[in-house]
Image 1 (cartoon, helix red, strand yellow):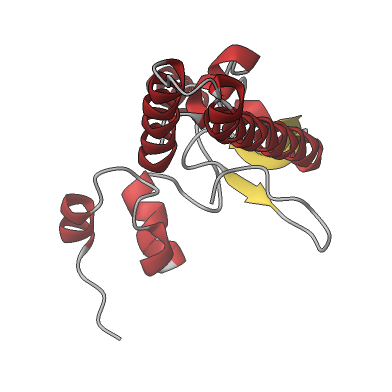
Image 2 (cartoon, rainbow, N blue to C red):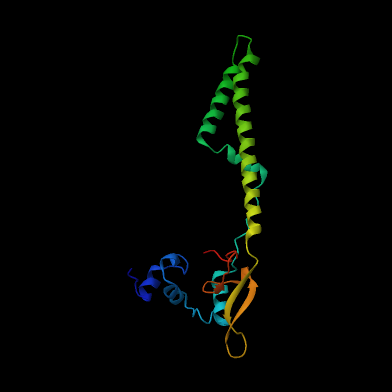
Length: 184
C-alpha cells in the first residue's frame, strides 16, 4: 500500500482527525506533531486546549414540550390533513340541511387522529432523548495519558487525567475493557 509523504497528508487532512483512519500510526503522529514515545509537551497541551476546547460533547438544552408538539405538525401530509379538516369544518358550518353535528364528525375525526399522532411522536422523541442520556453514563471519566513532565527534565510520564482534558495528539493507553476516552 502506498502512503503519501507527510506534507501531502497535512494538505489532505484539514483537521487532525478527519482522515486519521487511513494513516499509519507514524503518519498520524507526524500529522499531529507528537512523539508517540514522549507524548505532548505542556505548551502543546495548552495551545491545543485553547484551539479545540474540552474533550466533551456539547450540552444541548432540552427541547421544550410545546416545540416538540409543534414539530409533529411540520409535515406536508399533516398540513394537507389539517387543510382538509378546515375545509370540511367550513362546509359543515355552512350546511343548511340541519345535520351540522353529523357533518362535524369528519373534521373532528381528522383532528383527533392528528392530535394522537402528535402525542405518539412526542412520546417517541422523549423516549429517544432519555435513551441518549442513559448512554452518556458509558462515557469514560478518566484516561491514562502519556505526557511530558511539566517541571524538571520533561521526561514522559503516564498519568490519569479527566477525559475532558484530552487534546488532539494525546497518546492514551488503552487496556482490554477500557472505554475509549475520545471521539475516534
